[in-house]
Length: 171
View 1 (tube, helix red, strand yellow):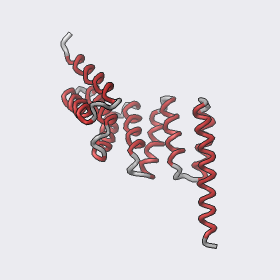
View 2 (view 1 turned 90 degrees about the horizontal axis):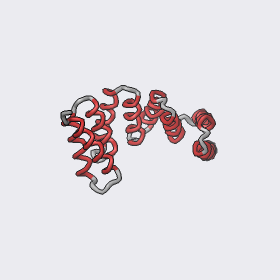
View 3 (view 1 turned 90 degrees about the vertical axis):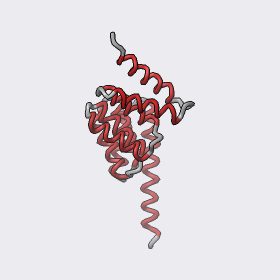
View 4 (view 1 turned 120 degrees about the vertical axis):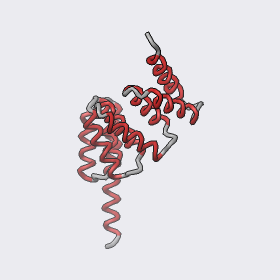
């Protein structure tokens, strides 16, 4: 009898995984509404299924529904506080929704947990530049270049820092 709850739990996870595979296929086909419906079905069975929350957040972000996306990423952070991808995406959604102070707080939290998160460092740099804190932005961009000079993010760091430099030049 004691094995039965494990079988039921295992079956539930298996069912959610199968549905999620279907949702991934639908998302890749651009059938976002259908993928969202399947994610809702998954979360009805297992509200802690992180991947379904993540997919919903990503789809909402793709449709520029930033505050709704932030809700999904925030839920992941509540379920799994160390999920850096969800936390970083939460910061991006707050930034895109115009909640700059909240975005900055989240970006700084991500960097406190992972001081080498280059994409987050660049996003914080852009936020700082757009709010007029040019020197702090340049520090972020320089730091990311020093951390990983050969990383793919380096090109975006150079573009961001050169844009900030040009914007400071008198006309």
